[in-house]
Length: 183
Ligand code: ATP
Ligand code: MG
Image 1 (cartoon, rainbow, N blue to C red):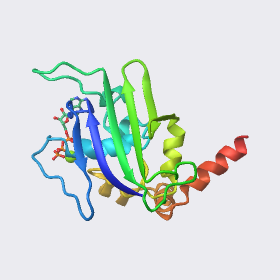
Image 2 (tube, rainbow, N blue to C red):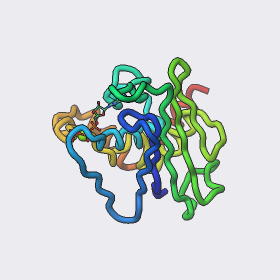
Image 3 (tube, rainbow, N blue to C red):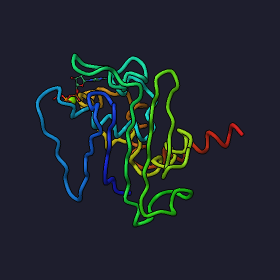
């Protein structure tokens, strides 16, 4: 699955709709401190179903909503859309009928998060499962936060094992086994 576009609206510092086109090869984002580079990576993680406020550098999930600035009032919702090129049909079963997948997550104050895949309402779990086996996803080892390298070096063996399992692409299996055991 190839990411082709990320759109942020009212997400953290990106108050107006902003498109990041992800083309073949390497995409670099450069800019001065505080311009929103890390916010872009967080938006990617968030649209794939991140539910931990800490991973979003916030105290609560609603902290991702544009909080206002001297010249702009705060927003009531934040939305991130991720467009995926699925022409090679690499998406998991259930999501694999279209050449293109658009995953949208929106959080509204006092309401919470809602997810869509190609305009159809889905659950958070569906979006998390969409990415669970693809070494992408909110917890993907391919997404490296600022400061994470030093955390990895200092990680305890169990935490390091989880990272290896994610990298091997088997964490989705654990999730499904856990659910099967509950049923
Ligand atoms: P550095 O180079 O220092 O790592 P960066 O480009 O990664 O910087 P970010 O951390 O992505 O910058 O962006 C930080 C900016 O985002 C800060 O100016 C902060 O005020 C702003 N910001 C974060 N959350 C919100 C929010 N909810 N509403 C408005 N602005 C926000
Ligand atoms: Mg940063």
